Amino acid sequence: MKKDKVLSKIEKAFRKTVRKDEKVKNAYLLIESDKLGVQMKLAEGFTGDFAADIKQPNYLASVGKLLTSTIIGILSEEGRISFSDSIAQYLEQDLLAGLHVYQGRDYSEDIKVKHLLKHTSGLEDYFWPLVEKLIENPEFKMTTREAFAWGKEQVEPVAPPGEKFNYADTNYYLLGFIVEEITGLEFHQALSKYIFQPLGMKKSYMLGFSTPEEEVDYPGADFYFKGEKISDYESYGRIDYAGGGVAAPLDDWLKFMKALVNHEIISAETLKIMKEDKARFRQGIDYGYGIWQIKTIPIFMPKKLNSWGVVGVTGSFMFYHPLTESYVIGSFHESSYESKAVRFLLLKVLKQLAKLA
Image 1 (cartoon, one colour):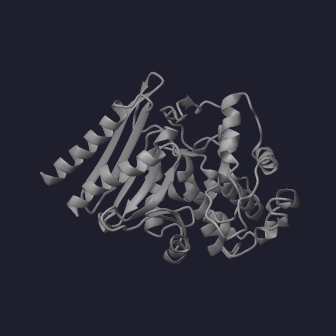
Image 2 (cartoon, rainbow, N blue to C red):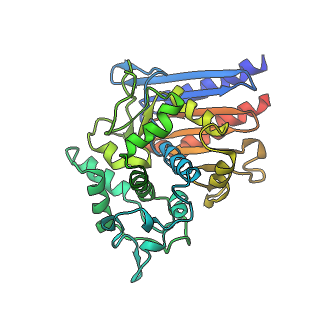
Image 3 (cartoon, rainbow, N blue to C red):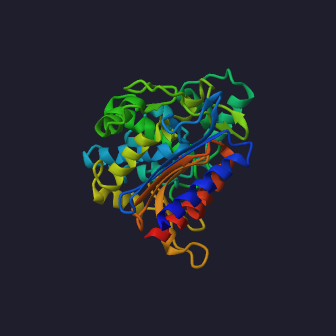
């Protein structure tokens, strides 16, 4: 009875959150825990005239960064890259030239792979200026490399490498280019080779670059930036690229997260490095290699909420809660919900699940 009550509270909170805010057009939530005997799948709202369905592909924005960092982890285990390497070993000169000039000094060759992974490179974000440009002109078209070159000309670094945490998709664009250089594959092909195919993620794909191995009978869920529907913008996926351009049904996202937690895709040792080599993101949250880590703050953030995963700007999240061995994945598909989604995850889901521990 207690479990039914807890799950009912979570479902009511989820549906109420969607229904009370007209900004949220569709939302999705998956919770699974063998330990608790819980499997919950919820969908609310619409994609156009199509009622939200849990089988729809969900673009989870920066949640995809964890797939990018995992590919780097795989390549490190193969001995093809080290987290401590300078990025100059892997980038073409046109990408590296003038990349990081700060207060008159060129730090471009001082950036290490690990700086990119945990956002301490000192580079500024190219993503938002590009998205704003796209919203102003939906017909705006650029290849990923053209977009990167544009950003390099328009945006200035904020600090020397290693001195400051500054969240920037720029770092993950560069990681994508590095993956391409090492593997000889385009990034979406590497994503398929190292993640989708081994894990049987047959309905997953990369926006603007690829299609799923198996046909999906449901439309991709719409997503919005500040109320503006941008899921149909042709160039958006090429702007997001390795910073989070993955779309997949929540069941496929779950396959990835389970494989990561259970060391089926990278070793426990590599995952430990990815979690423990971290920077302070904000109060109560550290950032490792594509990994958000919720940590204890007395009174405000009790130990029972400690968890790790990743959050996306569209109010999306994919987390593992060790106390209850629960996987929680979902999205509100609206950029104004990034912080709200974290609060929902912690207070409306994990706090409730902890009662069953």
